[in-house]
Image 1 (cartoon, one colour):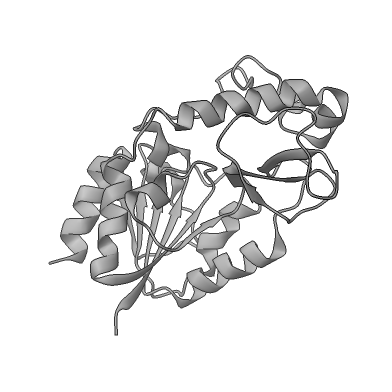
Image 2: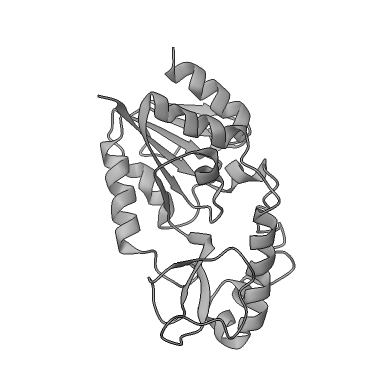
Length: 232
C-alpha cells in the first residue's frame, strides 16, 4: 500500500510559471483595491469591473504552463497516494498531472450562480454581465472572496487528507491566510513536514514540531530536493 503524501500549496508554486502573486507590496491587487475586486461588496458595487479583472486572470492562465514544481508533485503519484490542497485558483496542478486536487479558494476555470455556493460550471472564456445560469441567475467567478466562508466540504476533505498523511509538503505559502493556514496543523505529530519557501526558516510555527525540514528555496529547487529525499 502506498504511503499518503499531503501537499499544501500556495502562490509561490505558480509564481515560477508567471502567474502573478496577485497582491502587490502596497496592498493593491493589480492596481485595484482588494475590496473593489475580491469582495461581495465590490461585486454588488461594480460587477463589470470584477468580471473584467477575473477575465484578465483567466486569459493569463491560457498563456502559462505548469513548472517543474508542479510536475514533480504530480510525478510522486507513482510512489505515493498524493492529495494536493491548494490556495491557488489556477489549474496548473491538474495540468501537470495531479489527479486529486482540492481548491480551498475556488477555481478560475469555473463560475457559479451569484446566489449559490455551488452549481459550478466549467468556464474558460470571458464572463460578462448577461451570462446566466439555467435558472436565469447571473454567473460570477467561482472564487472565495474576502468576507466569504470556505466551503465546508472542501475544508473537511482537506483536514481529512492532512490527518491521514504519512508525509507532508507545505510549499509556496507564507501560512498567513486563515482558515486555510490551519490545515497543515492537522497532520500527525510524527508526520515529517517539508516546508519549501524562500522564507521557510521564519515560518517554523507548525505546533513547534521537531520534524520540520525547512528549505529556503523557490518551489522547483525545493521540490527537486524533496523528491530526492523521498525516493532514496
